[in-house]
Image (tube, rainbow, N blue to C red; front, side, top):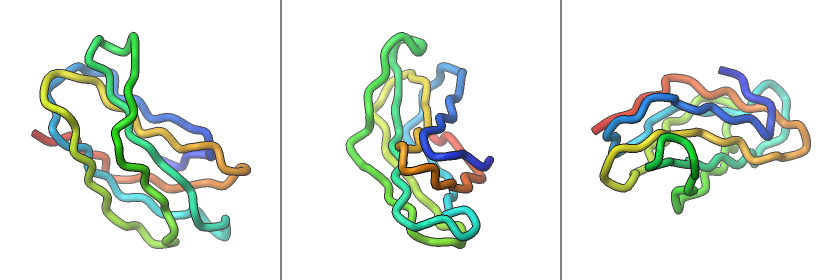
Length: 97
């Protein structure tokens, strides 16, 4: 998945996930420092809460990120924070118990 800054990848299935695991890299010659946050919803997407950790993507080669989520059923979203039109590659998304 190639997301332009300000994008959102939302997994539309409610389940009990303890971690979201994915690879990310700066796309092409875009500037480093793209920020990504993980959001989760415990009410089927009506409201969303940001996980505590903010990810800053500085590498042009894929690096793996793993974010811990609170216990319980939830939906998960990977959100690219708006950053002047820079792009990011996000691959190999896994939701894990």
